[in-house]
Amino acid sequence: MSLSLIVWLVVFPLLAFMAFHRPVWGVTLYMFTFFAHPSFWWWGTPIETYRWNLFAGIVLLCAIFAHGRRLIPTSPVARKTTMLGLAMLANAAAVHFLLAPSAAVSSESFLLMAKFLLLFLMIMASVKDRDDLRWIVVSIAIGVAYLGYEIMFNQRGAFRGGRLLSVGAPGADDSNELASLLVTVIPLIGSLCFIGNRWQKVLGAVSAGLGLNAILLCNSRAAFLALLLSAMVLLVAAPKSQRRKAWAALGLGVLAAYFLLGDARIVERFWTTFASAEERDHSASERLIYWRAGANMIADRPLGSGGHGFKKVYGGDYLKQVGSNFEMRSVHNGFINEACEWGVQGLALRLAFVGTAILFLIKVLRRHVSDAFDRDAFFGLCLIASTSGFLVTCLFNDALDAEWGYWTGAMMLVLAKQLAEETRWAYDCDLADADANDVLWIDSASGIETWSTAADR
Image (cartoon, rainbow, N blue to C red; front, top):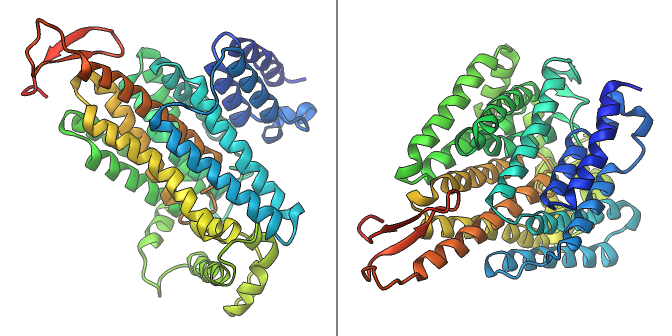
């Protein structure tokens, strides 16, 4: 038995025990089984057949109930999005049981949606304060650091066509999916360099660097575009008080990419993203054919065909209709795939589910952000940039239903809820010794009370 396996077997029950002391440790346990899942690493052979993610989820659920937490949020900020998520699951159930040609084929995607929606609710229920929210980011950062360490220093994974394969995590075991995961979480990890304490800043810098190196090795054009958009969102959305930090974060990312970008094949593949139709390489042209076939399937079956409806059932027939002999596999577009599986109505519910979380956080940040909530504002911007990058990667692979999209959605709603509640209380304060235009602000980190006038705001 290897030392890595011994350490893993010690950490798992330790985190499980700590979850009953503080439920957010159950989220750490889940991230631990996600990024260090035994079936994906050389040391895990003796225990790889066990469903460790399921065990971690059960521990988290029990810890939440043990602390008397509610799974369905009561706050208006989170409740609407939760109801949309439940409607999305109800629609998927109807398509799965009534329209799917094969329940056995469809069940995998349907059950994953149910599992990830439950995880979404558990993440929200496990967070009590801002420290809990930041600890989830720390847990993800540790996981990415381990993943990046194995890739960079232990040379894990294999390369085919200049792209990293055969390494990752559940649902992120090929280059495109792994790149989507890393693009989504790197803005959050990078935020630790500005909002964390001293050791969290170091962790954020190291983890972000290792994660960026892994993205470059994945050699995914979707990831390159997503990183660019995430940076643009961070800069454009940042208010004046946060713009300096946004530029600093972007500068650190560019500097890290410059030192890591040593493979000419990566640069060459990146530039093909912007090539004309005549210059576009074979893989990009092939993707357009799959998109056309998927669009034709939606036109014929607008209500959906169940899980893996294109990938494993109808895809081959529709590829032949557009004159292609390509093998039947995924449609390479999360939005098209969602409509193929769960119908146009399912895609609308999915977009509403993601969109309301983003809009709630933007609304809260615009209405309530001030210098007193400086760190929270920057973290909120990083969450928005993270989700924006995730949505871009979904244009080029079937990751719209990936679980890391649920992670960021839950964190956005938790932050929006906390800020809305705290600042509403601040606005409502009206003490006798204050002018009518004064507002009492409470710094969420230090608890320091300060008065500010409307002019200051």
